[in-house]
Image (cartoon, rainbow, N blue to C red):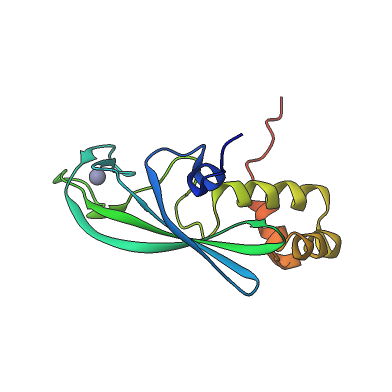
Length: 154
Ligand SMILES: [Zn+2]
């Protein structure tokens, strides 16, 4: 049995993300990581771009570790779309399995909370989320349910 690497703990399902360090302070664990993608596809037109416009840090709440809240500080690139007719001048890279557009939570935590919202809406769900050290309000849970894709009806 080997030592557990931070990389495996947080990003075993994610490609191209490198952990810099993890700092624990009180009830919060902050994981600093960066992406290494050299290009990304524009969400509007699909054109691949390798022209980095800027880099910035996204903060993503993640599932708790040892009962402590986890915040991932992920440095990502913003690319410039090279397609002249495209309305999207720049766009942020997304990391499959970790980030989604405008999301302030990791995909993993979002999925956990969506399940929780569907099974235990309202106060019970909100209480359980506090216990899981990823506390969200009742209204947030309801919002999550509303955003879920509607089940297909035949
Ligand atoms: Zn584009």
